[in-house]
Length: 258
Image 1 (cartoon, rainbow, N blue to C red):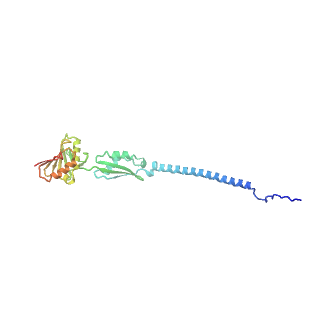
Image 2 (tube, one colour; image 1 turned 180 degrees about the vertical axis):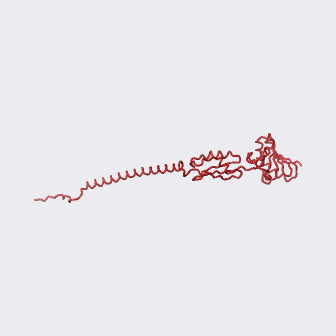
Image 3 (cartoon, helix red, strand yellow; image 1 turned 135 degrees about the vertical axis):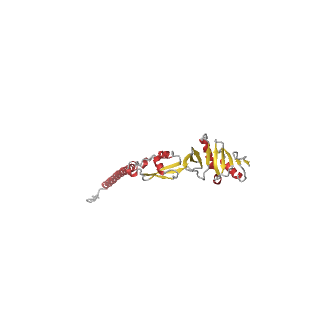
């Protein structure tokens, strides 16, 4: 009688391989689902955090009194009083510093005659800074008995109680156009320091009729302000020769009169 081979039965408690694989797959799926949900929550939390930070920063900069204007710093003034600059600047104290219109402040300050240029900036956390570059006088002009400083652009920007000894006087008639005074100032500005120091006054009637009176009484016919640098170089050479008048109106053909 032949014996039969019997398939062994699984031991009690042993897991079916298919069931075990299914359980592992379910666990992996659950982990992936949890990871996806956690990633989504992380994105949401990050977005909320950014919104809170942006909102807080916006409130702090634009609405909070913490960063509001409490003062105005003025630098670079000599002719002007810093308090006058602050008054004209009209910076709204107490307003958020970030909302101050710096260009408008600069425009107001530039209306002051002594101001050549101005730079306005924010000085965090609560100040506005105004850096002023003032005009520099190259000569003095008399108007209605008052001495005014004039810069190289011909702008009258300040008063003098008496004539500064280092500045030449520009003499002009009542009908002299402002452009002619500006030309005279351009001439003075083009003179080298030692030569400018020898000038007593500048006479001007029109833009083309400018002359210099030196401190020793010598007259220099200058003409217009055109080619002033060349004229100054020619004059420095001519001054080595004694004369009563030097004509450098055409620098390539100077004339000396004894």
